[in-house]
Length: 194
Image 1 (cartoon, rainbow, N blue to C red):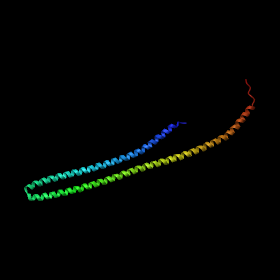
Image 2: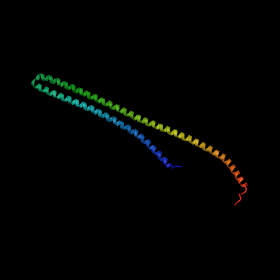
Image 3: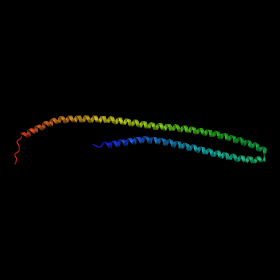
């Protein structure tokens, strides 16, 4: 009969692997969440940089135009005042547009963050569901194995009982045969010795 401690070592190793597998699934889910958040933040930063570049370029253009207008203003006061007023109006309109665009971008960022949170929650729920399904499958397998062990034990016990019954029946026949042979051997005269 093999030592019992070897089987126990195998079982505990298998159980540790199962526990590590669940932790790996959870770690992988967290990793996916972090990667998604990272990509979202990169996209957001790229959008902000592009907007800032465009705004700076637009601002630089407006400054150049404003300087030209101021130069012309020196030559012509009355015409310059009208041009300056128009430029101020355009600058104000652009500032309002920029503020409006900034608010729109902030709302988009909030929407994307909300979407990311929902996707993260879905990923967590899916990982939890996968773990629950795995645990349920393991439980079913354990129950099935226990049922099979009980059936095999019952079959083995029945087979051993039948074998013992046959041995008992055969033993009485062998005992009878042995007694007859013994009696015959006693009846035979001893062989002469040389």
